[in-house]
Image 1 (spheres, rainbow, N blue to C red):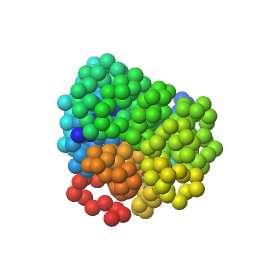
Image 2 (image 1 turned 90 degrees about the vertical axis):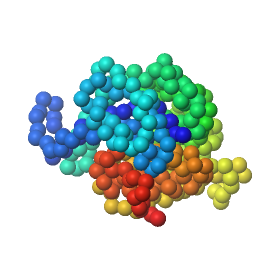
Image 3 (image 1 turned 120 degrees about the vertical axis):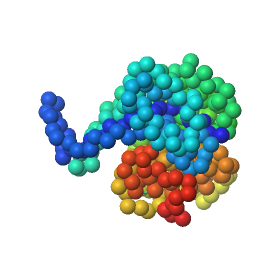
Amino acid sequence: RIVVVGSINADLSTRVARHPQPGETLHGTGGEVRPGGKGANQAAAAALQGGAVAMVGAVGDDAMASDALSVLSSSGADLSAVRTEEGPTGLAVVTVSDDGENTIVVVPGANASMNAARVRESTDLIAGAAVVVLQGEIPRDGIEEAARGTRGRLILNPAPVLELDRDVLLRADPLVVNEHEAALVLDLLEGDAGSSLAPEDLAHALRTAGIESLVITLGAEGALVGVSGADDDPRSDAAWSLVRVPAVRVRAVDTTGAGDAFVGSLAVRLAEGASLVDAARFATRVSAASVTREGAQTSYPRGGEELPGG
Ligand code: ADP
């Protein structure tokens, strides 16, 4: 099965005409509390697509915990390795202005407890998983412990990018990053910021740095997949090549959590034995469905639902 080790948050979202200045109070709208956190989002996306998913993480002993788990607990995911810690649940306070600009304050809360010792309590679960999925929203040593304990396939989505050890980064199969994160990971591996590189060049540079299995997501442009096998790109060798998977065209309403829908659904297909390119094609369809509705987990399609791009 698929084991996701990562963050669980409640997202409190508000809308304002413009962002307040320090010391200023403005009226806003919204105020909904929705489930979030990259770990929980990815686990929910995978479980809703029919994956056999177990979540390893922590919530607080406050009222936000049930909001944070509201979708996940009805998604079919196994939550027996979700601990309740004293103190607050992870919280993201999101403010969106009329021009679409976000400000986000993330309080890690219980997610900060997911260190190596805590992750070690789920050693057997992690070692027994066909696919383990990790992000960057729990402490670095917790992520590294989970990566090193993985015996199956490791999907590593270092978002945000932490200073992970090189051996952990090189275990990724695949590494899933957006363009910004790709440049930061290249910097970690080569001490050389790739921020001025085009996505294809970033992919080749990451490959040279040792990342053989790679997905760079490109928002409405889809994704670039680096895989074993030849194609027409003159920089590819017989053992490795880049495939561009286009996004599915939809009317975007809210792209929050699209990257997490992509990672979760990618995990489902990879666990079923699909190729990385086929899994990425499926992931662009699930993530496209997610951008047509508000929120992260609340926007994710369920297994039986028809997906765009079919
Ligand atoms: P992140 O939010 O992590 O930066 P991206 O913005 O790259 O991730 O989005 C992840 C995936 O979601 C993309 O690869 C794409 O398949 C899909 N996606 C994102 N935005 C859109 C959009 N406007 N239309 C269709 N698909 C989208």
